[in-house]
Figure (spheres, helix red, strand yellow):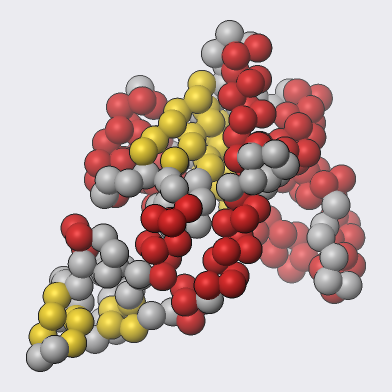
Length: 230
């Protein structure tokens, strides 16, 4: 089972990807990790990518896509993979599909977690980190995991520990920049999603497209996803 997963920052994409990876024993592949590993190992593609990164430029698709395809054909992906973080725009989607066909790499599912921009932004900015356990879910904008209150201060809903906000979660400018790319329906990530939807129509429903409402809680979204993957 080979899967692409899409969703804006704040949609729970990473959480759902991990659930799928564990359920079906496939490899969760993140594009950012691929870059870091290739640069660290000083592979030919990694060295080329580093030249662009060091100059502050975007790495061309001609380097990125071969790097990703090489990763998807490694032994730990033989049982299937879930690719997270790529493609980010229409041109990358088109180029990735061409290269996958050329190298006989199939795509079974495209998962899209649908969430409006305002809600996605609030979820990011509403996240609070527990001092005792970073995995304790707390978010001031999600009723199901809203922090508790003690002596006039918000505390962890699970253990009562002190809460703090990550600085990058409060960087509204950076959040808006990422979301501007994602919600662009002409050339951005949503255009990439539409590319695969159009491809599915052309190919008689292949790859299968799974759309999920990202507004409910993690368990509800996960239950819908597991049901549609069967």
